[in-house]
Amino acid sequence: MGAPAAGVRWAVRGFLAVFIVCGLVGIEAWPLTGWRLFSTLRQPVERRWEAGAVGPDGIVQPIDFAALPRGYRGSVKVLRQLAVSSPSARDEVCRAWADEVQRTTGQLVVEVEVSSLAVDLRNGRAVRARAFTCGRRP
Amino acid sequence: MTGALVDGAGWAERLDRWLFAPGSETRLAIVRSGLVVLLGLRIGLGPYRQLAGQAGALWRPRSFLHLWPSMPSLGFMVGVQVIGSMAAVAALVVRRREPVVVAWLSLLVLAGLRTSLGKVLHNDVLLLLASVPFLLGPVSFRWRSGDEGLAWGWPVRAASVVVAGSYFFAGLMKLRHSGLAWATSGNLRWIMLAGEGRSRLPGISRFIGDHAVLASLLAAGMLLLELSFPLVLLRPRLAPIFVAAAAVVHAGGWLTLSLDYWPHLAVVTLVLLAASPRVESEPDWWALRAAANNKAA
Image (cartoon, rainbow over all chains, first blue to last red):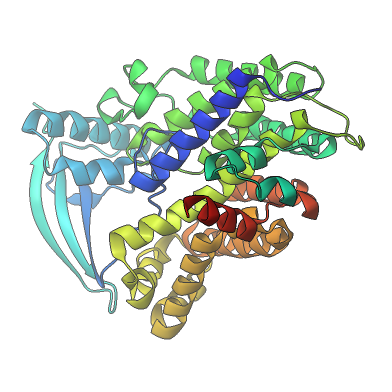
């Protein structure tokens, strides 16, 4: 077999050029990526968001997203965006979580409580602050 | 090869000559077949069926996944897995390009659905990107061919650029977003302590998290490895060292943070070790630079 055709050569050059530009500039156009893997500096006090399922008695049980089906595992990231979402968007997401928790655990959920958490990684101490509730069932 | 590098041609032309220089048919056959096997394994064994049934409100599509209004049904997932797996098997026996294209598209869709949960996932990205040149390249099953030719070298070299680039850009992004503090501050300590809950070896995560100097040394080593990865393109004889170092990093990430980068490591091993070109086909980078300087002068 001989040398690749001119069209193939240009396609390969183009692909590598796009791959390199995405890497250099940090463009996310999946599967092309900016390769941001653990690139942000972590601090000794980690800020997280936590969701809790509120039962009819008002008792809040933290939602363990890892125990829910795989389609719900990205919820930790969704949770982070929820704080800046509109109330209707929050309600939609929270109802989805409430439904799945109820389906998976059998626990009755009337709404979801979202809290911000500041965890000092040096001593494990956590300060929790209730941020908002959402997805209340009518 | 060296002679070709010291004439009056410019950088772009010389890099082009390197990329499209003659290569071994055996290496092409090994790397292509290996990537097809990996594509098939990821398509067939990946956790895609469990994605079905996700509530529409949680759908967070990436790039082309916006074509879907929500997470597709279980039937769709199974269908793509079956078609993709069959295509991967066909790509190992049929001397045509189409089966590997179908297998690649299947993994593209399935892995894309997996990355539409809210977080960009990189687990399958290297496999997808390193396979791109083989979608366009020649097909060969001659594992023991001694043939060298212009047709065989470029897909493997293009895949090597992608492999080296994946590490280099990961290191570059760390420097861009965090600077040297990524290694010199307690950054890795906090990563380890924050990830302790999902660690396979919590004792190791805690140990690294409790020892600032050790954490900084490990972080510096990782940054150095990532930024120096393109050296493997300049000096392919270093490939075993880079592959071994990458194996240590990914095994460490799997043990301490449960990061599943085994497909990534498999691609690195396959492309860099099986594809390690002959020494005489290495470009003479010093001559290349000298020639460019002479031309500029």
